[in-house]
Image 1 (spheres, rainbow, N blue to C red):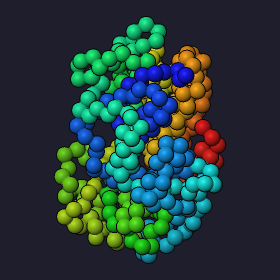
Image 2: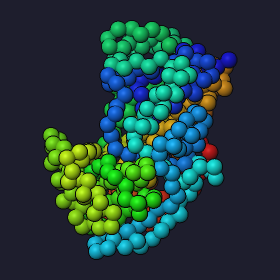
Image 3: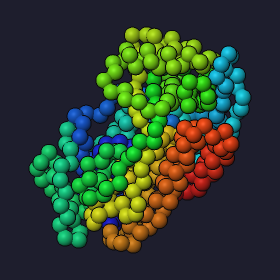
Image 4: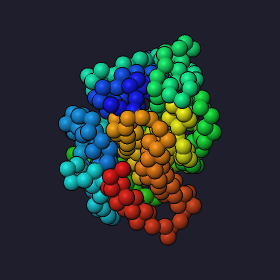
Length: 379
């Protein structure tokens, strides 16, 4: 017997689909409602740490993800300027344990597709062009969900996994929202030079951080972090030109990246860094938020996806193991998830703050290594 028999989930990202898969495998009836008309087929890359890979294994998708992505261990630090010399090769903590690589780069749309296919395989109902537009608690044991302005029925639980700008979060009266940290990032999906076998970062130069991560045998994503600016309305051609110009101080594999940015098919996007952490509780009655709806952070530690997946894993584990959905279950969920997510958010923001303040005495490697060791412990 599970604590819930019928669940609605808002959103179709990693946290939403991971939760849906685990619950459906346990015999729960699950409906996923997604605002967009179809699964996104555009995007750049994503870095997945070992603790994220461990969750994928529990969902039955790790072999397919390993096949499509680019697993690696280690991190190199290069200096800007002539020759881009490697100044440090750092080992990475295997946060998922010895059975998984320390990290993996992957094309984000491929990850979305693998999770969606698995969800459909285990019987999850997937509904596109179906935004959740209203919720109403029905006593202590049910919630009615409205989609596109009409009732979609009554459920034992609604899970808001609908991202940073969560509508479900607003509907249940949670006021905590993402705030800009002062940085913005250019990302481009490009070809991978043979010499790039793991993530590499450049500190200094015109950007706060420049870097790239392999995502496949022939692909990688590159990024430049700057002081946040209003980049709204910039064409794809202009975005590629700006990223090209800002990368001129960086050599090594950046020569290949610039070649791709000059091509007609260059794909570049820009986003601001934001952060937030919703204090406990993340639920209001029979509605709960997880993933980016509950917490977000700059990608300076590359733990955002892993934390969203851990939310999904812990919540579904508790729902499957319990007979009733009561305050004890919520207390356990928050005790296991809030301190861990908060540690990642605070460390990620701190790394950015040190750079914005040009703090040369900051111990960034020590902070990164400390968080990695903490993430290596089971959530």
